[in-house]
Image (spheres, rainbow, N blue to C red):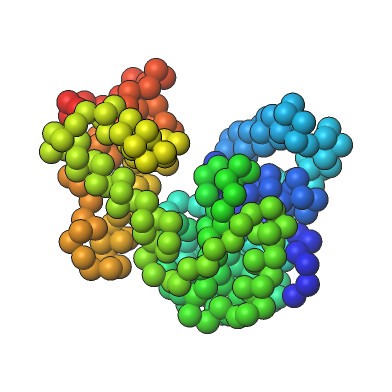
Length: 297
């Protein structure tokens, strides 16, 4: 396969819309798919606002913005992705749901197309095995938010071809990203290290080592992290952190990866972080529907 000219992105959330923005800003035709029309409208508005912020800072021109918005199309019909050179999924971090999507995409997209997953922890080999093109399936894990973060983690499945890897790496570099490569083990590189650190911060809070504020301040000022681990958990989504810990625990089989009971309890209570307005920290915008009874922290 030559240079990527058309991209499909499945998932209109923060990750999917950010990946679509990267493609459009780099002059690539992109279809952004989501089954929820409201999510697509929100994504389009978010992408436009995000690009405008780059324009306001002098990092992009108005011409680039206009061309990017011309390159971007939204759809609720998966069939519209049929001609894409690569499809990147950025949907819910659930293996069965991703497998089902890959089965459908495998039937829809052209034979030469690459299927990439933005999963942060799930086995690429198992996703690839659900298709008839395992050589053309790869992990392409963007960091959040994709337009700003400089890293892309590329994960080869057991049968991923050299050509698939080379094309995917070239695309990430075209986006201006630095690429690291990981073997297909649970959590890959970044989340194999990051999420257990976050889980340990929850254990420190759970056992009364320190307050949430002191835990985060200690890590920010003591290790030069831009965000404390508990603050970062709210940003990522506590449900996502819990899901990844469960994948690590199941995939690596070590009790050190068992999720902290406090993290489990907060997710059970619906305290999922910024996306719900309430998490480890209380945020101002808390609706009556999303505000559960919760443990005292």
